[in-house]
Amino acid sequence: MPSSPSHPHVAVVAFPFSSHAPKLLAVARALATAAPSATFSFLSTADSLARLPATAVVPAGNNNLRFVEVPTDGDQEETCPVWRRMEMFVEAAEGGGLRRAMEAAGDAAGGVAVSCVVGDAFMSMAAEVGVPWVAVWTGGPCALLAHIVGDAIRKDICDDDDLHGASGDELLTSYPGLGSYRVRDLPFGGGGVGGDMHRVMTMLLGRVARRLPRAATAVAINAFPGLFPPDVSAALADALPNCLPIGPYHLLPGAAATQANDDDPHGCLAWLARRPAGSVAYVSFGTVAAPPPDELRELAAGLEASGAPFLWSLREDSWPLLPPEFLDRATKAGDSAAGLVVAWTPQAAVLRHPAVGAFVTHSGWGAVLEAMSGGVPMACRPFFGDQHMNARAVARLWCFGMAFDDDNDGGGKPSMMTRGRVAEAVASLLAGEEEGARMMRARARELQAMVVSAFEPDGGSTKNLHKFVEIVCARRV
Image (cartoon, rainbow, N blue to C red; front, side, top):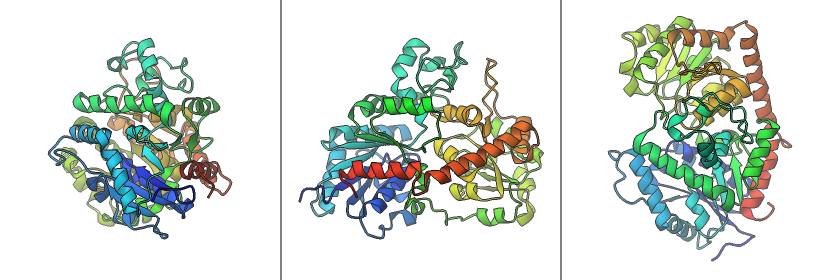
């Protein structure tokens, strides 16, 4: 049975790597909640679906969201490098795998064919499957702008290997929406992700930059109206078809089930509950980025020197790199310990906790939005991708934090984390009385209020979500 305007069938397609799938699932749940008479199929690989929280794959209350595995070709074992798994997955999807998965989704839905694809922008092959493609961008919106005009920037200013060269501190004032950023903030270079991974990511992002402006019916971005200055919003609207800020994605209706906030195996929230308001520094660099060993040790020493309680989410394979006896010193006092180092935290819930007053992080876009949602000022140590642009915006555009890689536009190699800078940043963000510190905390609270306002019944994200649903379902709901 084909789909029809009265019963659309929407395939939501996730890029099955890094943190993309949970963000796409948040969007899928919001759509399924807003359009209960439509059918939604969430497509990703078996491995990607298995990594979602157990609560995430429970059917929606009205049972209009189902999960469909996208088959993979070749060796997808963990021993295969991530870059190669990405490459094989994209090759298979481009070679007909996505189309076959959509047919399987139609069969699973009782023969109702897919009428629209809501696809992660990295799944840009969705532009070729014969139904409307509505794209979802999960990263920083200004990084997407940079990728779209990337060829012109490379021709005019630099190539990917010269971001920190003589023009590194030059502002990108000739490119609409990018005037607040420097050449060295651009997301093009390897920046710690080199070799084959850099090659694969360059290939993926190049396809996004070419296909998205010409082939997408609409583009959802993980932002909220009013977040960016008018020139940035205008540049996004000019570059993208039907650009709709509907975020933050983790706050969309129905998205809470994707976050596993109740999954707190290390007792982080209970530990925070015993700390005074605004007293704790939370530290996390996500699941991909990691400071080099020397910076990791400097960070640990700086946290101790700050004298502030800290909660540190750090992969266990990095624990042996910490200074000798650091873990014993920091955590030896049990519930009254100065610090808590764990392998995983429910981050969105941690950043909403009133005890948390500072966030030391890699400035991934999801982390930036979660900090805004919690009203927590940031200290950013970016590594690659959009993180340098995000850190620049935190420090200079929204002014609710600082960036360790910011050398005040003075040229030369940007400085990174040292124990002194970490201790100073943490103390300043938590309780500094200097004007800059007070302003950052005030700006964090203002941004938090803007996030809340965006999801009011007449808020900007709420209105844009309604438009998004209309486009996806090709009818009013």
